[in-house]
Image: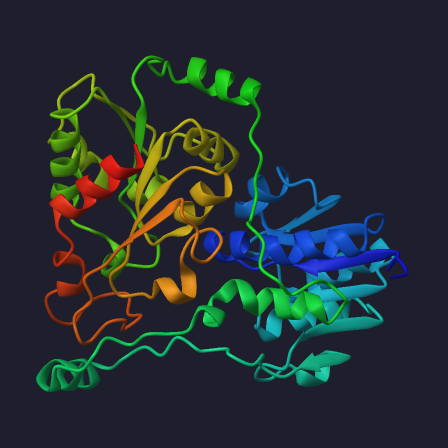
Length: 360
């Protein structure tokens, strides 16, 4: 297939979604080995894309920049084709305002006119419907079966289908982020990580909201149980917003058994810290996807969301163990549970320990 010359990719704005776009971009690189790929991302995700060999150039924007300002900056890049990954009107407007001749994306609300190729939703696409309190109560009263979705509903396919409009193979492939041994050595020295015991990483936060956060006391209980079985060092990971829940866990652990890195790493360093781990116990959150991308076994806790839609790594990957005990109202896709968070509370400490032991 002829090269595109210069392909502009408007990236998504959340870490987990960004990792789920990697297979689409990896497939595009297979088709266009010599095309220049430029990706636009929010500055908070620059550390992810600067690590990925598929992308030649990374352009960032900040919260204060309007779409007109961003679009005006893009005009000087001599772009021929834009692939608009988010469904937002803003993302399409930026590419239209930049005068990019070919603009490919989904025909979402308020933006069809801004695209030269507006694709209808792919076959098998399922939107995440947020249930109302009355819907949740009705599900519980009727003892309904928890909603289940086919494997082709996974969001990875959403981006692969877009890439296929440019000739890419739509078959899923594992998202990959590579970390070198030198980077691991540097991070171990920087944070004085002990080198003998296997490392078990905990990701107890979730930026989306508390409906995704397994209780801190249960993470601590898992740590105590694992320590009773084997020598282990725990890495407590997350961003600045996760420091409070991490401190709860710290208060329940013995000194010397853990290293608290929450809020202390850049995004790039978070990827390295995950790569040093033997296993990761995590909520359904952005770093969960990053852990799978650096090829670390993941034990993922799902409550209000659906693993069929957003499981980490390649769907069905043997390196991932999904823990969930869904009540009739799951998944509700809400940020906060209006009832008693039973979708998370139903997941036991014993099941998490068993999954970790099987992995280790």
